[in-house]
Length: 154
Image (cartoon, rainbow, N blue to C red; front, side, top):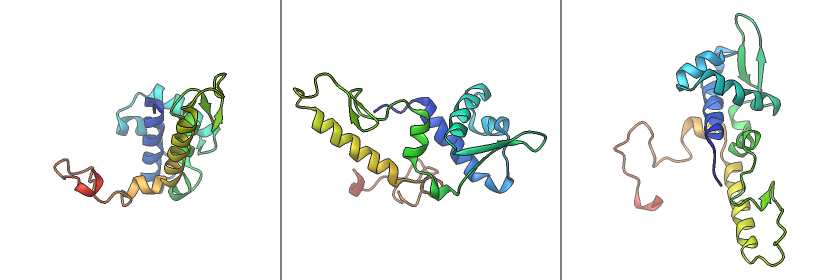
């Protein structure tokens, strides 16, 4: 699995909207400035998020985007799936289905299928709220680069 820049930025946009949800609709231009990402690039990403029903928009002076649900109601898998073509570890698995002409003879397919299932379960267990609070990973502090990760996590 390779999460593209689009996928990573989609998470950043969703986090930004969640962090500033009290402001109502948030201008994409403001989000682009805060995230140091091209407005044109974010326009392409936000269109996928809107099409998937993850965000809604309004036009006008107070226009912009906002989440359609509370942050704890979004999973990372849902967000990434709205942007990425395939989250499976290999191209012969797509959307959980085996799509390979050689599947019957391939001894590695069960391993890749299991890895795909493990990854999907994990990404489904992480919410936007988890990313906002960081409480799911107490040993890793993003704000302090000098924090050492305990042996328990290495």
